[in-house]
Length: 206
Image (cartoon, rainbow, N blue to C red; front, side):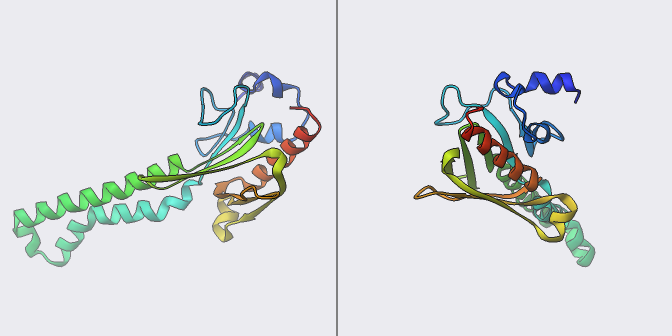
């Protein structure tokens, strides 16, 4: 992305903000780490509230589910290789194919839904953690920026070091709920973005 494109993407209220997080937030954007998304609105959003960053879990977290889905999809052929008699019965083999297809696709859909709808948001007023444990339920946690007392990040072992994945812990004051951004990409950048954003908020820059 060119500097001109980045400048056009950033809302006016942030363009003259001399903070290091502005550089990090506009670099290496993808569907798991997306700054200043266009046309995004969420329940409870204030009229002038600006969504700064949308974060989803890193794709590496869903590799086991993807591999399981692939294994389920090829299971009829694997079973047929072990028990050749299965290929001789068309009804049994087709039944296995249909069953494995339905189960495999449901695993893939579940992984996609969890990745897409489990969202962490940072705005110029609050942080929001939206979790969908399954398609039938969801939970939403949020806290205002002024309630944040501490921000820490922890990488996810060897995978975290290789793929730059970790969890960001947002500690809040009083009765406000602590928030965790779990298994997100670029946890150090998220920590820096939040820290700089808090300082800008305290100084009245945003």
